[in-house]
Structure formats: structure tokens, C-alpha cells
Length: 245
Image (cartoon, rainbow, N blue to C red; front, side):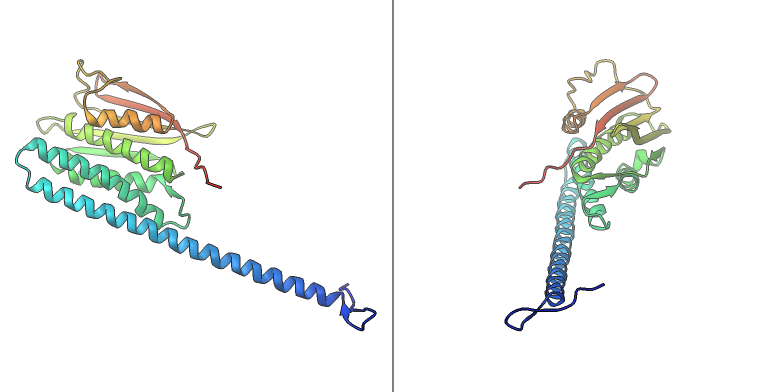
């Protein structure tokens, strides 16, 4: 039963009228909060979109410089830089296209990365098949972007070095949860393997150095096997974003 209006000593009604006033104020406050959230969502989506566009401008500039490079080492350097920037751009593109602006689907992200890398290394990519077995999981940007860097470096390294002289082969990417909020990334190829004189713990190549840097950023571990092809196993946990007060 709804409260009945009560007349006070001055003849003013209270009770149900006060309840109506409180409900109206509450609804107005809720609508203001919803409007604020919508505004922040639009702003965040626009930020991801602009970051992606700016990164695409950088990739275009790097591609332009690679076309005017004087030797193959310079071309390779610009191509590697372009692929690294492209991996970031793809991450932000996935973010602003999703409903959840803080997380994106790993399976779609990895497919986009490998498709770009295959076309980037078109001569090798025509002879190499990339298989991906990625679980339908989502990760936050602080974990997803470094992971994209790692996959870019490992797949690029295989495409550049594992299959010389038009050798045919396969690269396999597996990514999924192992339980206890832990994830495992496996990247294997059936190429020529890692040369015996390569120090995998302190590599000279920038690509493998970046892999170690991003694995540490994910607070993970990395294992290499270089005989009968190359196999890399990385175990990591999702980075929890710290919100400022």
C-alpha cells in the first residue's frame, strides 16, 4: 500500500509527495549518469579511432621510405618497423569496433596480424602456410598490444629466416588459457631451425630482444627450441590495469 498524504500543523501535505519528489530526483540523477557514460564512451571510441589513424599515417611513411631505400638491409629495417606499428594500429582498430572499449577478441586480432604479415613478406608468404588455433578469449589493451608485438616478431622472424631458397613450410600459432588466469602462446615452424651460435637468452637481433622485453612486460616466461624447426613457448598472465584515483 502506498503511503497516504499526511497534513502537518501548517496544513502542508507530506508523505507520498515527498516520496514522489525523491524518486523524480533519483531518476534525474540516473539519467545524468547514463548521459555522462555515453559521452565518455563516444570520446574513448574517438580516441582509439584517432590513434589508429595516426599509426596508419606512420606505416604509410615507413612504407614510403622503404620504397626509396638504397639497399636490402634498409628495406628490411623499414618493413620491420612498419609491421610493429601496424600491430599497434590493428589493436586500436579492434578496440574501437567492439562494444567493450577496454578489451578485444584475440582470435580476430591474431588473424588480422597474420594476414598482414603474410602479405608483407609476399615472397616467403606464398610458400608458407600459417595455421592459427586461438581460443575465443578477450584481453585488455595492456596485455593484448604487447602480445601482438610478440606474435609479430616471432612470425616475422620465421617468415624471414626459417624458409630460405623458396622452401615450403608451415607456421602454427596456438594461444589459450591454461587455467588459474594464466595464458600460453605457442609459435612453431618446421623451417631450418635456430643456428647454434645464436644466444637466445641474450640475442643480438632486435626482434628477439623485443620479444624478451615484451615477455618481461607481461611478467611471463619464454622457452625456445631450435632443432627440427623452431618452437617458442610463452606463459603469461593478464596485466590488470590500475585506475588512478
